[in-house]
Amino acid sequence: MSATLWIGVALLLPLAAALVVLGRPRPAPVGLVPLVPLPALGAALLPPGSTVELPFLLLGTQLGLDAAAPLFLLLTALVWSAAGLFLAAGKRPNRRYLFCWFAALTGNLGLVVALDPITFYAFFALLTFAAYGLIAVGTEESRRAGRLYLVLALIGEAAILAGFLLLAAGAAGGMALAALYFGLGVKHGVLPVHVWLPVAHGTAPTASSAVLSGAIVKAGLLGWLRFFETGMPLPDVAGAVTAAGLAAAVLGAVLGLTQRKPKMLLGYSTVSQMGLATAAFGSAFAGSWALLPPLVGLLAFHHALVKGALFLGLGTAPTGAGYVRMGLLGLLALSLAAFPGSGGALVKAWLGEVGVDGRWLTFSSMVTALLMVRFIQLAREPQPHAQPAGGAFGLLAVTGLAGPWLLLWQVNSGSAVLVGKAVAPAGVLPLLAAGVVAAIAWGAAQRSRLTLPLLPPGDIVNLLPRLPPLPRDERGTVVEQHRLRVRTRRLAAWERRLRSLPVTGLLLFGLLLILAATLR
Image (cartoon, rainbow, N blue to C red; front, side, top):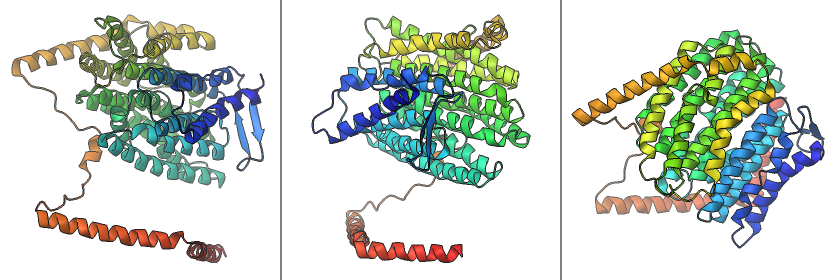
């Protein structure tokens, strides 16, 4: 099959599924959900450099595969397919949720193959708005998490658009790349806009959490890879970006230790792991950009499959004594903590090759190991809304454990040096240190009956002022409710006036006159 056909089917199939769900009065067959992402696996096997030109669409759309796209396309298809299998094995979702699911999948796959800024932005925006429907499901807590996500995501969208416009105007560095840094970084939680990640991951349904942490947060990394190269090198900001990434790596793990819900903990773990990716970009800004794309691809692939499997494992109801489930969760946790011989150790070894300080990598491994000890402790408790996984958890877990080594074998670039560092016995020392610290902390807690302080998920967002409560007395409450009804009626009247065609036309005509006068 040609590149045009593979890419076309990969994008049009989820879009068609979204439209079918939207127009279908009866529930859609959820058994087909895990099959929709599979054509993207075929597109991922296309040779890099395959392109499709659509000059009639937007300002000239260019779809295809650059050096980073095949790996991101592969991880996106695998995570969405496994999460779809989990979704199909449980309670049937409603029509709105399924529509948002397929729309978000379309945006996620589309931005991977979008090679020009306008098309990338269009798919990125589609993913942003559709992902809200995957978060704000059911409870007031999840709706609040969805609102927090949407506010930060919209700020990120504005920053991305500003960055692209500045790049188009010839501003290769400075403000343009700063806008793209924060705008794209909202998706994977750069400091200080990381606050939506643990809240959304912790309150969304299990399948949503898996695709959020596994695939959707990688959209920002891909955007950095694709559009930062215009302004390379940037040695002046290399140190600041590296420091911000390492701070996120450590802070995310430390804040995760204070959580009592394992999904919230995994959300902070994602902040920590994406901080390592940010640190890698900072090191590349100093001049090692050529080494970065394969490393970021490997890091994203490993994290996507392992973290997606951890979320699915949490939502999987144990069978029998649950030894297989806990055993797989333990192996995935060790891989995330860079146990020697794991995919995580391979990623850390490659990070050292790019130039990230080895002492920080060691410290990161130790705090991640502490975080994973805490996670296993929480995961042993019965989880709400657990369900049979339909094999999704096991398939994604095995792929996540073996996949990084298969990728290294496929690339075969400097593999001997990396393998030697990844299997070095010295890599177990940070994990042993973490085990000792965890044992001491557990013993002290048992003797003094102390527990870790609970930091509310979202950390700094909880410091923002809240609206004052309504008066408690009955008369005051009635008065406030009457005032609210009056204001609502007035707003509705203004909205009806603005919706009328003559008023809207006059407003638009006035805005055009102002714009014309400004451009003179």
